[in-house]
Length: 196
Image (cartoon, rainbow, N blue to C red; front, top):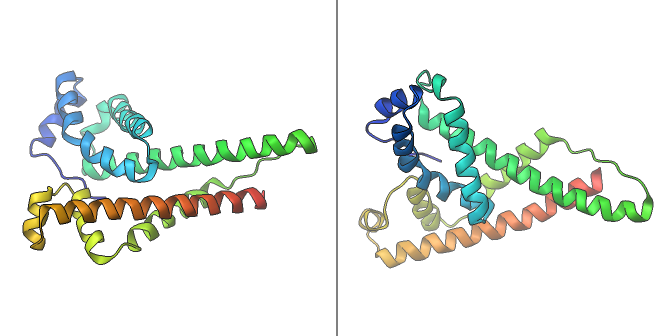
């Protein structure tokens, strides 16, 4: 994910590091939409997306005094976002797994949970990469440009297609990614469940 940097980012970060709440609001407004679009690809939930965006900015506010020392803020923002998404996915998978285990334990009277978190995180990253790489070329190009903040009319102009075509490619890409992620998620849950 490439996050488009705002022009006055350094000044905003300096003010935020000094505790300026107005500057923090500006920082939030500058980045929350880009982050939300990216997060929604993996959560498929408006509520969870909003929660993750909020968690990202809470973390930034909590670490505001050190924020001015970060050389690449958009890279830092991406890392925080990615980690929080993976935590949400892992928690969701663990919750599902625990529910399945609980149901099984009612019958068997035993309870064991052994999830290799690093392996799961690596698998999820591979899953997300595969979902993006599985897209047809035009969908992938449009989707990548939208993720990078390029607006539909500009994409249409650059690719010499209509704005409606851009919207359609974006919808198809999102649908394909959702199906891919949901299918593979189910497979991973079953594999983790059977290997534990």
